Length: 449
Ligand SMILES: Cc1cc2nc3c(=O)[nH]c(=O)nc-3n(C[C@H](O)[C@H](O)[C@H](O)COP(=O)(O)OP(=O)(O)OC[C@H]3O[C@@H](n4cnc5c(N)ncnc54)[C@H](O)[C@@H]3O)c2cc1C
Image (cartoon, rainbow, N blue to C red):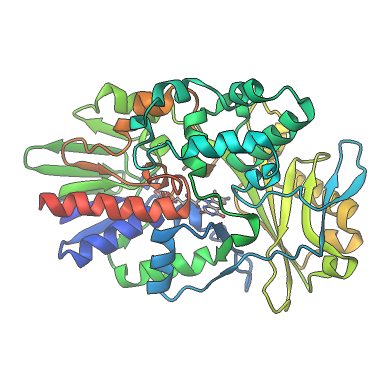
């Protein structure tokens, strides 16, 4: 006998948890199914076998992340400014292993434009961001033209200064997780939006605590280890099944990335546009490494802990130590772009955590000295292919948003779509987008009930 509920939510990441909380508040019965070993999805940075006492570090958000900030306030999850001390120097390790001081070479999240503040190219970009419809970029005036254009082509139409172009392209690649010739201008305009935050305005929170507090009231409703293989629907309801059995419900919320939804069999088949959207969804994955030290020793050398590596593994680090400096913490992001890697990354590292760790520690030793390659704890959140998406951002290639955007959130019968990738811009692809998408999907279901 299939278990029965009002709404089955597939995916207990932040978007699925946000949807389930809203549905419960609306008086509906809910079950959450997740194929992983614990709730949290991509926000659960630590592997389940985490070393004792080690907690994952922060995730970062801009001050305009309204849905996430409201939720954090409701759940009493502290939000604090990201560390930023302009008196401390960032470092760059060049391709020959030379170490240089620089005061602005490590982008924090989506802040590449802070490096363009004084450039005329920035004005042109800022003007364009104001024309984009953040809820539905594909409906913006001139959307087709903007979406046809790659960011690289647009940049080149503005400037032939190769140094400037290289700088912008590199910063963009680090931020978005894909090279500029694979990203549509429309996506970038929507991703950045009209309110350009400065680097020093960025905030941070503990994603593990956020997940824990979101999941607590749903205890008993979350079933982990339930990989969903099939979703069938007819005029009576929905049936969601996997090797573990079946759940029947009035409606389903698929709170999984489009790339993950591509692996689920739907009956009847999804509309072709939705299927293509899922099949072609671009994945920009990174390896995040959290390193813990006795203290933030780099500050004693006048350094911020922010290092941008052109040598060894392409990565950048930032200081994630607690404000009271009771321990030192660095977060390192290593990019894995696949074969056409513009940063020349050694793609072998994605499936080789031991090698990645050794290369990263060697990088850090060169930049910050011998103390850096002797952390008291180190964890790599993702290294190599896993069962589900580990995408960090969701930049789309030319033509994608205008071609498939309208299908991102459009329900298919009794199936509704959540996930960060379906969130409104500029939070789309981030924790904020995950929260807002869960709320939106829940509202859709509540309206139908
Ligand atoms: C390393 C890293 C660093 C990041 N840093 C930041 C940051 O600093 N700031 C920020 O805002 N965002 C950051 N992000 C992005 C953020 O974590 C995600 O946008 C957000 O967590 C996505 O939540 P979600 O619920 O949409 O999807 P997910 O977290 O992917 O949740 C989907 C869930 O569905 C489950 N699932 C998938 N398919 C199936 C299936 N067939 N059956 C059953 N279960 C299934 C998965 O196990 C998963 O738990 C980062 C992401 C990564 C990977």
